[in-house]
Amino acid sequence: MIHGYFDDSGHPKIKIPVSGSREQIEIEALIDTGFDGEITIPSVIGVRLGLELTGLEEFELADGSVIQNFVFSGQATLGGQNREVRIMLADIDEAIFGTGLLTSYRLAIDFVNRTIDIKEIQPK
Image (tube, rainbow, N blue to C red; front, side, top):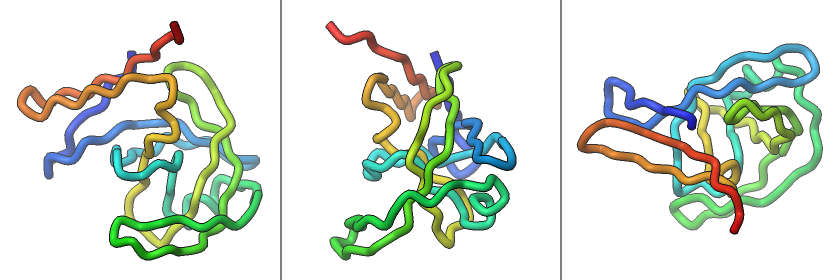
């Protein structure tokens, strides 16, 4: 089981190791259930990691606008398992953890008790 936490502002977060060809770092990422991608990180961190550019894709934002963004390949460790992930770089201050990484997990966010649990679920 993976445990997240709430920051001082009450935002759900997770710490996740992310790596590229140059470096591995543990990032603190906002859990965003409205983001169906995998991970978005600040551009400066992506450059530091040495991520590999894999393409350009269109994404729809919460306001309905559509943008194009470069997508990079990297690795992330979730639940002790290292896996290839699609990482977007953006001019943002904090990383974003999307639901694209949760396809085989159950996410439970309890705002009352301030707990976040991510549990891998085996297919039936």
